[in-house]
Length: 562
Image 1 (cartoon, rainbow, N blue to C red):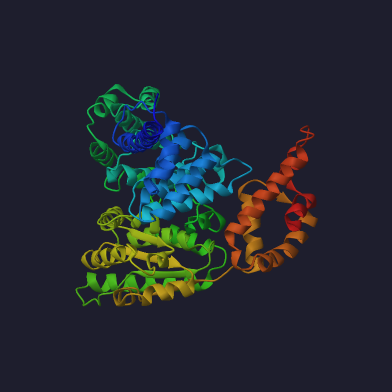
Image 2: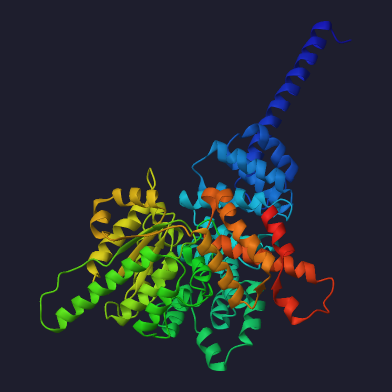
């Protein structure tokens, strides 16, 4: 018979043992969780890992890891939320911003294009905070053939620039390096049909272990000669490829020579104006390879619509240079002059067109040795991490030596706070001083913002002392540009259409206000008219040549109503 006291002791021991057992189990569970952070081949299930981690560890690493798992399982909204929480806890970690941008890329559809802007914002934030993965993400956004939904903002030059910035950084994350090399090759091969360059980069991707790199290299290799293949298969790394391509295309380098200027991003250059005013194709090389005479270049300048003040300023510069050259030839003293220029004006007013003509004119006058125009903006000069901005800026300057470096929206180099744009300005000023005999810089942008840019540094104001302002086109000049576009492309206007155009352009300029892009707006107007004509004629293709060439009143009505 067990006494009451003994029974109570047994019960107490059992209760204490159970409590101690539970306490030990909790400690063991905590140790197991912490071990999972260090072990690769752990046997605890993922559900256990996340559920226990939710209570045991409240930091950015948990949310980052959870977001990556959601991302791998295609649960993108949950992944984005986890990454967002991680960025709130640890806002200084730039890799998190890359993951947020990469997740938004997966959410982009034709109906939800706003996610593209969100992705770009986070990629740029990653770059600004020093994570080269942001360049990789931006390359994917601008890649012409990667995402069909991004067709409106695709840019071969921007994609190549960002992919190269990432590859040069040497920053590897999972298989991102081999993917970047393969994507870079595809931009050259598929978008630009530069098969030698494409084969170089896809070969490096194949060497890094990429299956897609191997497939694409085999495809591009079929377009090459045997001796070209031998050269490519001797490549060891990205630097070897760049040297090979630079030697193949001359001192300007493969990148600048092969890539067409490609407007269509937030940092649009003024090169599109060459089509509206100079009636050139945007994909034409920046270097004037035809070596046209001074008279031919001046005739083209004088043929531009409007720009009377610009033409007068340019003629004055040319006269000064011609007289200076004559004095030099006769052994007389010549006053040292700064040739660097500031172009101010709104978009689409022909700044890049005039800069390209100036490069050729200065070459014919013997001021510049080659006469090429290298167009850049902030993204081409400023890197996102310490020490790289000066390198990128010098690379662009070296491409432009013997010609003109055209910096569009130069005021974006000046920003408040600790920004790498100042490093680009300091490098530029030094090179302008050291290479002033055969190197010219033109900075361009809005008038007020360019004034602030020049006032930001005393060295800028002293080196840029010549200003040329590009006024907006008048309605009459816009009509002339539109009519010239029609003539160049084989279209004619009906009588009623001419009347509508005369009424439209003034009202369109007022309606768009600050967003009016002068010649670019005319080009957009012309393209919409051609689309409307095609929609009108598509129902009956049994039509005459005259009808195919004629733009009628109904082709312009929808544009006016917009």
